[in-house]
Image (cartoon, rainbow, N blue to C red; front, side):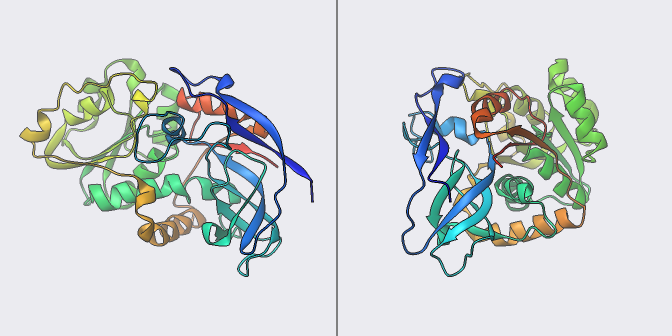
Length: 332
């Protein structure tokens, strides 16, 4: 058992884009366990867009990340010590242990993992919180029917890639929006979307019109701004919009909508959601997602940075769209 481990704390709140100086790497002592607690050696750390919002002091749906405390983040790892009856040394578990090599949590806050058919890292992606966000927004808000058309922004990312595949499994035509020819090729050729619009080509509305000849019945929105505007222009009456993220405005940019009147004209339903507010559905969703991964029906891609010290730059790259699929940090 090591006497100490490394963690990364929020050293300063961003003023505009996130920079490396917003973080600080520290060495801290391994905590003694209280009754019911479990100590994990984290193997992978998840980096996710929501973390940018938590770094701000602005009022939001969740409390801001505290300064000089471990940055929030989901992890998966192996139990090294336990004072909880449900966990033993050697078990694998997922938790919210943050940007750290190790961490302790009450056993009730951890999820035991079976890595026989699903790789450990995938419990942070397609079979974890991003997968659940995709599953919830699609099955509870968009409610797709076979033959309908669903548009997914940030389609090559951890959430969007799952949305599109789940919609295809339900018999939909699926059109992704992604940045760059390489990402669009991955979305079409690997993930199986019917089409992908490269927003960097500068013709989002025209290209989306060509890709959705029968209009759009569902939108899974991760970006906001111009991509949402383009999709709104193609909606059919009574289309449903699941608003999962607005990464296009995370640095304070304005995201005006030219086509907001379409919300009324087409009688659209738009619902924002926070997936962690719907934990009662997680067992159902996670079971379906893990089964699809195990059966090879849900494909995934991981972009992996090595070592905790690499986390800040990897996170900055994520916010700039440099990753493909799920952005992870490998800690061991």
